[in-house]
Structure formats: structure tokens, C-alpha cells
Amino acid sequence: MLEFVSDGPVLTDEEIAERIPALRVDLVNAQFDLRTADFSVLVLVGGDDRLGANDAVQRMHEWMDARHIDTNIFRAPSADELARPRFWRYWRVLPPHGRIGVYLGAWAIVAVGQRARGVLDEAGFELRIKHIRQFERQLADDGTLVLKYWVHLPREKLQERMEKALADENYAWQLEEVDWQWYDIYDECLPHIDRLLKATNETDRPWHVLDSSNSALRDYTFARTLLDALQERLASPPSPKPVAKAVQKTYPDLLGQVDLGQAIPKNEYVELLAEYQVRLTKLTRRARQAGQSTVLVFEGWDAAGKGGAIRRLIQPMALIDYRVAQIAAPTDEERSRHYLWRFWRLLPEPGQIQIFDRSWYGRVLVERVEGFATPGEWQRAYREIRDFELQLAERGIIVEKFWLHIDADEQLRRFEARQQTAYKKYKITEEDYRNRQRWPEYAAAVNELVARTSRDHARWHLVAANDKRHARIEVLRVVCDALERALQDA
Image (tube, rainbow, N blue to C red):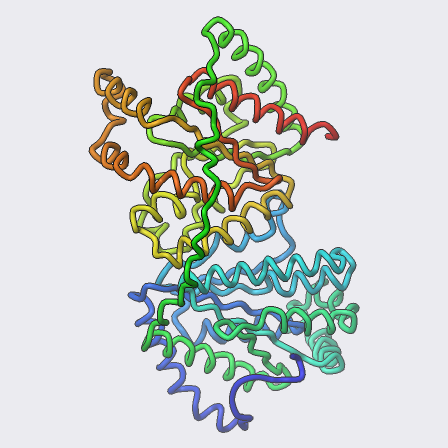
């Protein structure tokens, strides 16, 4: 694609100068209108001319209101970033509705550089492209206006610019070691650039290739295409994407296969609890030393015993070794971004266990059944969730997911018992009883999500929880076994 320099007529410097005043007014006005819009704008700027890309963004800051632009410059990843999945650094700084987020560098240029240097082999490059497409697709599907620019300069002109900058003491400071490193592998990068741009060039998020030979034309074209896209989106929000007709597929009744009669006598439970908690204490200490991170997801029926299982799990751990996140309805800040944003931000530090009491599966459970998510939103969530969990596993994070299963009679018994217990009354609401009326719908949703999202690297465990003691021991056993497998070579 580098042979195609995008967007707009070739203008003289005089013609560009004449158009800039009106362009700047329109840019600021569109930016003002964006502030109350229900979408955000993500502007990805990269290319083989880093200095030119920086200059284009600097001009954007001058021509617009920089107070409402969040610019992120992605350099070599920090230790924190290296310990998380690759896209964590991009997810955590997503702009909210009404704002423009600029990403300088980021995933495209990183993937090309790593492929040219041999850090990524052919299969790794293909997988990276797949993750890039999925990431951009998720943002666009969620309503984000995604604009992508590749700032291109032929090798001989790049050399000329760098030598000229080096000779000018007022400009030489802008050159960095990364510029020379990139120049050294320029020719090796070209086929990978072309391949990545073609593979990720989509109708609703195309690449704009900017010729950096003429800086005035480059900056004008960058600003003009940004304005055109923003004005078009503000004038006519995109129509809802057509939802493929759901295939009438019957998923196995996995919940019905759970033996709810499993139980552990109290005296045996006390012994097993002590045994597993001692084991867990040692394993979590080893995990901390090895930097082995873990994500544990707890879902289940109301009153199934998630809280009790989590308490027995964290009792033997040092405070430094775990965090518990209780997921409720999203806040206004969370609703202004993709629903996965809040979960990416909560990923554990190296060696830590992150426990989710409810999770991203709310999109295909509560939000699906109660109608808070459209059919298009919850249907595509399966693909998004699988990609999210795959990225966790690729970074070496343990992912274990638990559905605590009880029958409707046991749930009712526990509801009534809670109402008679002073310190448990707060757990029962009208909504809990209302949800019981939709038990078949929730059960069908659970069977589908387990069938579609249980993988070797992120397995669902359907835990019989009519007997709380059995459920607690089963959770402890699964977590201990998972840590042991991961640490056996550490």
C-alpha cells in the first residue's frame, strides 16, 4: 500500500496556506461538537518517518484545542507493561466518549519492527495481525471512530532528513537511537509494512498513507481527513450493524450434568480445608517469587456461595498476593468506553492473583437476558471474550473460571434463611426474587457461554454447590492444581 499516497489533491504551499485558517476553525468547531457526542475518536499515527509523525501530531495540537486531546506516546514497554498482555497498555488509556485519543507508535509499528528483527516469526506475525484486527474491530463495533495514519518517507529521503537534522544543533536533539535503528532495518521492514497495512485495511477503519516528503501537504492532509471523518460521523451516526440471524443451535445441558448430590461431611471438610489452605499458602508464595500471575473468575446463581468460596480462598494468602474485584453495574466512566476496558485495567501485577466476583461474562448473561445489551453486542461478545482470554494465556497468566451451581429449591431455601439472619438481610433484594422467574433463560445462557468459551487455557469449572463445603474444597483444589502445573518448571 505504500505506493498509494492518500487522500486529497496535490496542493502548492500557497494553496495550503490559504486553506489552513478555515480548516482550523472547522477543526475546533467539530471538536467542540464531539464533546457531547456518544462516541470517542482514536487516532493511530505511526510510520517509517517518526519525526514526521511527531510533527503532524504537533500541528494537530496547534490547530485544535489540545486540552481535549489525550496523546499517548508508546516507547519501549515498561516492566509493568511487559508483565501484562501486549494490548494492556493500549486498552488502559482508551479515550472516553467526547474525546480524541492519539496513539503515537503503538501496535502497528511495533509489530513490523519485531518481525523485521526476528522477534516475531511468521506464525507470530500472523497471530499479532489477528489480535490487531480484533482490537480495532472491537473498538469500531463499540462506536469508536478509528482513524489510522502511516507517515511514509522513501529511504533516501529519510537519510537526507536525518543527516540534515544531525547537522543542525537546533534540531539534532529530536533524533533518537530508535531512528537510526529503524533506518538500519528500513529495507527489511518494507514488505512487512505493506503486508500489515493490507491485512488491517478495513472499510470503516482504513489506512491513510501520508507522503512525508512535503511536510506542509502531509500536515494539511492529516488534518483534512481527520476533519472530514469527524464531521461525517457527527452529522450521521452509523446505522446499527446488521446482526446475523442467530443459528438455532441447541447447546448441551451442561448444568444438568452436574451432580448436585456431592457433599463432604463436616469433619472431613475441616481436614481438607486445612490441607488445601496450607498448600495454597506455599504455592502463592512461590507464584509471587516467580512472577506467575493468575486470574480467577467467579460466576454463579444468586446465593450459590461465591462469597464464601472466595473467603476460604484468600484466608491463607498474604495480602500482597491477591486482589478481589466485585463487579457491579458499570459507572458512567465505564459506560463511556468499551465494556472490556474496566477488566483490562484490573489485570494482576506479576505474581499476583486477581479474583473477579462477577466478570466480563455479564455481557452474555445479565445484559443479554435482561436486554441491557443488544443482540449484536452480546453475540459478538463471545468472539471478544475468547480473544481477551487468549491474550491473557499468551502472556502466561493462569485463567480459571468457576460457575457455582445450585438448584432452584436450594436457592429459595438460602434466600429465606438470609432473611432470617441479621447480617445477611442486605444480600436479598426484590431483584433476586425477580431473577428466579427467568431461571430457564439464564440456564440456557450459561450452557451456551460455557460451550463457547471454555478452552484449555481458560477452562470453565462447573462446581456443585448445593453443599457449600464441597464447593469450597473444589475451588481450592482447582486453584492449587493450576498453580502447581504452572510452577512445576519455575
